[in-house]
Amino acid sequence: MSERLPFQANSARIGNLVGAGLREAPVPVDAGAEDRGLDVVLAAYAEWRPERRRNPLPRLALVLAGATLLAALLLSPAGASVRDWVGDVFSAAPAPSRSGLAAIPGGGRLLVQTSTGPWVVGADGSRHRLGDYEEASWSPHGLYVAAAAGRRLSAVEPDGSVHWSLAAPGTVRDPRWSPSGYLVAYRAGSGLRVVAGDGSEDRPLDESVAPLAPSWSPDGRPDLAYVDARGALRVIDAANGRGLDRATALAGIQWLEWGGAGSRGILLEASPRRVRLRPVSGSHPRGGPAGDRHHAGAIALGEPRAFHLPAGETVEDLALSPSGNKVAALLGRRDGAGARRTDLMIFDRRHRASVRLLSVPGRLAEVAWAPNGGRLLVGWPRLDEWLFLPTRPVAGTALAGVAKEFASGSGAAFPRVVGWCCRSAPDDAG
Amino acid sequence: MGTEQIAVEGEAAPELSRRRERRLVRAAQDGSADALAELYTAHWRRAHRAAYLVVHDAAAAEDVAQDAFLAAVDALDRFDRRRPFAPWLHRIVVNRALDWARREGLRRRVDPEGAAEEGVEPAGPELGDELMAALRRLPPEQRAVVVLRHLLEYTPGEIATMLDLPRGTVNSRLRRALDQLRETIGADR
Image (cartoon, rainbow over the protein chains, first blue to last red):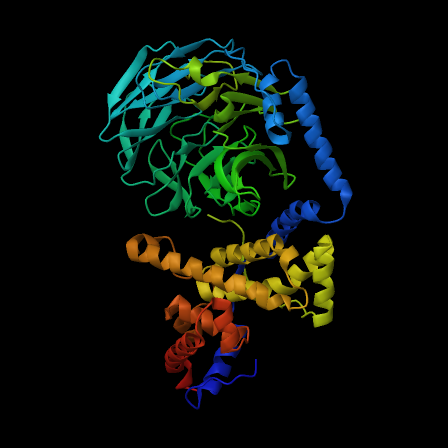
C-alpha cells in the first residue's frame, strides 16, 4: 500500500486529494439498504450452513422433511411412477407404467398447450382440444379462453366455439385477461394492446414493449404492468392509458407476474439468475369498486427484495402463489458429476425462507399453482408425468402417460400446462 | 417508484483488527451467523461506497454490494482465512460493479434516449460536486482503478491481480484518470 505512483511529480498530491474526495463524497443510500442486504445474506448463509458444517439438527430436519414428502408420495394411490424417481435417485429400479388422465388432484381445470394446440382438461380428466391456436390463457373464471393464432386473437369457449375474434396489426402473443374480466391485454408485433372483454374497443397501449407477457393487477382494477422496450417496468391504467408508476426492470427479465399480497399486491420479476419481489402500494381517490374501468388512482412501486438463488442454479420456470406470499421455482443445475438436475424450490416472502421441495435428475418442464394455492403441478417430461405436489407434507399424486393423452397423430411431445383454473365461481364477468 | 427515503451514507462501522477478522471468518466458516453479520456490518459501507463510485447508481450499488456478499457466502468454505477478508470482498465488488457499468454503458449506446429517461445519470442528492462529476465522466475501467487505488488504497500490483490485468495497464489507466481529474481538482488547489 506504500507503493508510489510512477508518473508525474504532483500525482501523489492529486491522488491524495482524490482519495480524500472519494472518502468524503456523499453517497446516496436507500434507507434500510444495509439491513435488507444483511437479511438476504443471512438467509443465504442459513441455506449454506447446513450443507457443509456441523450443526446436525437443521440437516436432520431437512432429511426428515424430505423423507416425509417422499413417504407421502410413495404411499399415495397414484404414486407408482414417483417410485421410479426414487429408484432413479437411489438405485436402479424397473419402471412400471401407468397411463390415462384421472381426476385432477385438488380439482379445477387445466389449460394445456401442445404442439397441436391448446386443450382444456376437465376436473374429471376429460379433455377437449380448442383448435389450431398457438397460445392460450384462461379468462378469470374459466368461462372463456383467450387464444392466439398468427395475427388473430379470439375468445373461445371451453367447448371450442369462438365467442369473438379480431385481427391485430401484428402477431399476437401473450393474451392476458384482466381479473375483472372487462379487458384483455396482448402483445401484437412489437406493441402492447388492449381490447374489451367483449371484443370491442381494441386499441394500442404502447408501441414498443419487451417480449414478455404483461400482468394485471390482482385486485380487479384495470392496472397493467409490463416492461417496455427500454427495460422500464411500467404500470399503466389500461382503461385510459395513463402511466401510474415506473421503475427499472430487472436486467434480463423473463418473468413478470402480479399477485395478491399487500395493499395492491406484489410483482414478481425474474431472470435466469435473479428472482425478486416488489411490493405495490397505492390509493384510489376517485376509485370505484374493483373492476371500475375509469378509476384514477395513485400507485407506487416499492423497492424490490431479491431472493438468493443457490450458486450455480438458474431459473427454468417459476410461479407466484395466488396469495403472492410464495414463489415456486424450478432451478436447473449440474451435479458434481456434471449431470443435469432440477430442483423445485419454494421461496416464502413473509418468512424470508426457502425450502427445496424436490430434486430430480434431468429436467422438470414447468410449475403451476393450484387456484387455492394448496398444490403445485410440476411437469416431468422424462417420466411423462405431471406431479401434483402438496406444499405441506401430505400425500402427493402423479399422473402418468401424459403426452400420449394429447397425441393426435403428429407425435407425442410433452405438453405445457399454461393455466390451472379457477379460484372462484364463474359469474357474468368472464 | 421507490417510496423509501434516500439518505446519505453516514458513519462507517469501526474497522476490525486483523486478529478479530480472522476469528470472525473462522467462526462464520464454522456456522456462526453472528460472526457473518459482524463481518457484513464491518465491510458493507466501504463495499457499497466502492460500488457506488464505480456505477454511480444507488440501486445498482446496493445490488452489487449484496451480490458480492452473497458470492462471499457461497465461497466461504474455500476462503483461506490466513488472508485478509477485505481484498477478497473488494475484488468481487469492483469486478461486479465494472460488469454493471459496462452493461449500462452498452445499453446507453444502444438506446441513449431511454437511458437518459430511465435516470441512468446519477440521481444522488449532492452529485454536483466537481470531483464526482469528473469521476463520472471517466470510463468505468478507469473509475475502478481510481477507486481501488485511492479509496481502498491498494497498490497497482494488487489492483492488477484483482482485475486480472497487466500492471502496466493499471498504471496507464491510473495515469490517464488522474490527468483528467487533475484538470478538475488540481488546478485550483
